[in-house]
Length: 203
Length: 303
Picture 1 (tube, protein in one colour):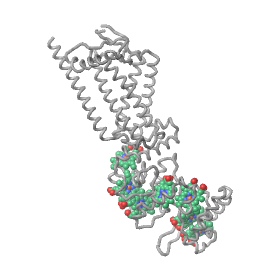
Picture 2 (cartoon, protein in one colour; picture 1 turned 60 degrees about the vertical axis):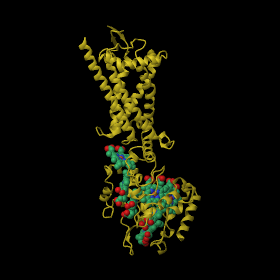
Picture 3 (tube, protein in one colour; picture 1 turned 90 degrees about the vertical axis):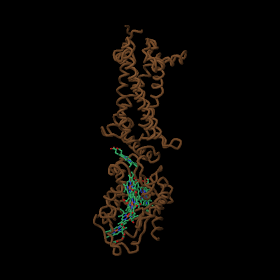
Picture 4 (cartoon, chains in turn purple, brown; picture 1 turned 45 degrees about the vertical axis):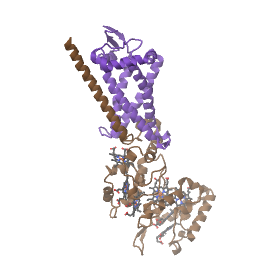
C-alpha cells in the first residue's frame, strides 16, 4: 500500500466549494425553472444569483491556479496513443470492471486523470463552464442585449443556452458522483479528495 | 372650429418664443382659473343627458403634468377669462392631435401612430360609447411614464386607467366580471400587479401600442410571457432591469435582479428530452452499479 499526495489544499477547497455551489445552483435553478415554491421566488433568485457569481469567482480561481501552479499539467492532452487509451478505459468501464480486470490507468503525481476523465474535465471546465457563466452573466444584465438576435428574442436564446448547459451539468455531476466509486474501494477516491492523499496498492 | 384656429395660433406663438420668458405670467393666470376650478365640488348636471360634468381640476397634479408649463387658456379659449363664461365657449372641442400633430418636437411621442392605433382599437370600433383620448387621459393630469420610474407605480397607473371603467362598480363591467373573464389566469390580481393590461390586450411590439384588441385576439397563452415569445417578453423584461439598473446600480442589479420571471427558461421540448436523457443516465448508472455489485459477489464466491 502506497500513498501519494495528489490534491493540494487549494484544489480540495476549490473542489468542495464547487460541489456545494453546484448543489445550491441545481436546487435553486430547478426551483426557478419549474416554479415550485419551496422558498419565495425572490429569495430563490437571490440565492441562485449569489451562488452563480461565487461559482464564477471559483472558476477564475481555477484558471489562475492552473496558471500559477503546475496543476495545469493534468489538463495537457497527450495525443500519442489517445485513441487506444480511450478504448482501454471505455472497455474497462463497459466490460472489464465486471470481470474484475485491473484498472488500465495508474494514478501518478504526473497524471491524476485517466484519459476519459481528463477529456470530460477539459470539456466541462473549458467548454461548458464558460458558456454557463457567460449566459448566466448575460441573464443578469439583459439591458445590454439587443432585443432580437436573428429574429429570435435574445433573452430567450440566453435562457435556453443556460438551461441546456445546466442539464448537461446535472448529467456530469451524476456521472461524476458515480464514477468516483470505481476506485480502489467504493470510497477511496472520495477519501482522497478529503485528505489529499491517494492510496492504492497498484502505485 | 373657430376655437381650434385660435388654439393653434396661440400654441404656435408659444412655440416660437422661449417658454420660460413667454410664460412669465403663467402661474398667475393659471391661479386665476384655479381659484374656482380647484374646488373639488365644482360640477354641474348636463340638462340634456343628465350626466354630471365635473369641472374640478386637481391643481397639485396639474403642476406635475406634462402640460404644467401651459396656461389654461393655451388650450381653452381666452374668453374663459370672463366670468360667467360666455356661451360661445360652451361648445369648445379640444383634441390632443390639434397641437401635437405637426410640431417636430413631439415626434418621439409618435402621436400620429397613436391616433391610427387608437382608431383601430376595440373602443372605437366596437364600443357603443364615444371614445376619445380623454376617456383615458385627463388632459390636466396626463404624464407619460419614464423608464426608470418605479415599475409598480407605472403598472398601477396604467392599469388604473383601464380599471377605472372595467372594474367600476355599478357598471356592466364590475371587478367581479373582470375576475370572471380572467378566471383562466392563475391569480389574476397578482398578474395585474406585475403586468399591464395592455401587455395582453395590445399587439406585442417594440413600443406601447394604443390598439386595444378584441378579447378573442388577446394573449391567453402563458408561454408568451412565461417562456419564449420574444417581443412580449423582451418588452417587459427590459423595462424591469433598466429600472433596477437605474435605481440601484449595477452590482445590486446583478444580485437582486427581478428581471427573471417564472419559467423564463421553460421550453417543453427541451425539458422533455432533457428529463428523458437524465432518466436514462440515472438508470444506466444504477444498472452499472448493480452489475458491479453482483459480479463482484459472484467473483468473491468463486474464490
